[in-house]
Image (cartoon, rainbow, N blue to C red; front, side, top):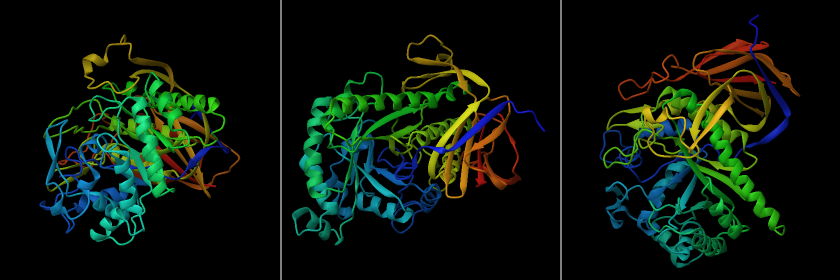
Length: 506
């Protein structure tokens, strides 16, 4: 027997949180080639009768999204919701996405997004324009979507061909509205006043909706404290965004620690407000509704944010999703950004589609984990790495060598094995990332409160012989997923730089 150099302990009776609800979301935005050209291309050779690309929809179905965020992101600030409903010929032919000077067709509007969600079994997470529209506009939107009365906005929906209410229940109020890159930028106080009035009106129309307010989630917690305090009892969740990635493998492998720090900080902010407002018992959840690897590309007119992802990026995405799964006690919604082309899990041209490396990492964990996340502990090798506290723009190789930047957080003893365990009925799933690029790790597996039996299903991310390998339109299958069945044993060897998902019968 191979001598283990690590121990993994699984504590079946110690639940971290449920794996349920909108945790495995996708994000489609009216930006770049995400929707227009990537998902919706009515004049293209892969278009269905409804204008959607059949290959993109098929790939989206493989990911089984719990929800789909739409129409932004930053794009939400450029569209009045009234421009995205009704007959296509009555909508504006296009809107200017001013960040890139690119026009975006309004052909894929709210009804089309709802139809897509219904087709793939997802919930629509609709971002409201809190930037340049009014709280009353937000309430009118809810009435249009969900009203059953003979009122102006419900009747407008009927005129547009839909008699029954759509029943959309998940709404985000604006996007990164604290930032000067957004039209309608607001201070925390201004935004809180807008949201309070909007939520009162929206929930007067439909008290069963869930509303997500914009958080900052970065160093300097004043914004989050102001918004949480002002919207306690009104908003159901507060959102945080962050993007990760560096051109050094071990630095990438510390991205999850940065995400953990961010979530810990906003949890502290929530707890501090609750401690001071004892009359409120309902704790707002966290919506981690934009996250991904992003450090190579910038905004451009023709190829906006089109990252080509490597095998290393796939492991980074897996480690970030691990953070979500370990924190479902407080993280109630999460979606990766974005689905297609711009920071895309998918990449297309007019005729072809490639599932990027990060697609397969996301799919492995989406298919593997359900039920409840349980506590694990690891005793094994460590490594050193560093990472930005939050997204700081393009990171080139030369800049990445600088160890002295004050924006960097250094991790001197980061665990080499990143582990998440979940239990659902008689299935126990263990996903393990080996964050050492040059050393396999053999681990002894120990289970407390549960006893695996029978064989083990093993699924692995393939292609790790080259950490910089990519899936491209010409070579779409260099990274994928392999599956095998092995005998149950006391130890298991995790290859260098690997993502492995083990499924046990219990």
